[in-house]
Amino acid sequence: RILNRPPKLNLTFHVVSLDETIQTQAGTFNNCLLIQGEGEVNVRTDRGNNSAIVHVINKDWYAPGVGLVKTERTEKAETTFLNAGLYELELLSY
Image 1: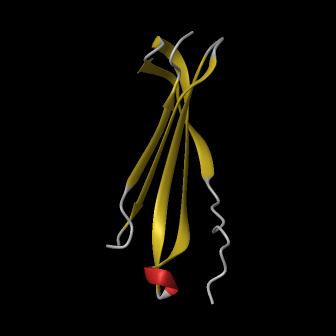
Image 2: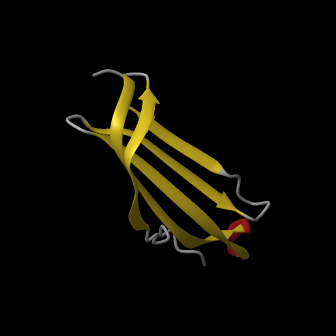
């Protein structure tokens, strides 16, 4: 029997850059802080008969005086049961 519990994902974050330039629908922001987190999680696939390792990369851009202006998250697994995914959020106006 498969229990419907979400798998636990731990991400390790580090500062990638202190001077990124990022463009969003709200405009272009300079001198942004880019923080990247990476981790892996084992998820069940094929109705629980198999499992796959999903590699997750999360990127956050913070603009001085504004805060978080963009988030980008990718998820990839080497299995035919899961498609790669991209999740993006960005500031629309400021």
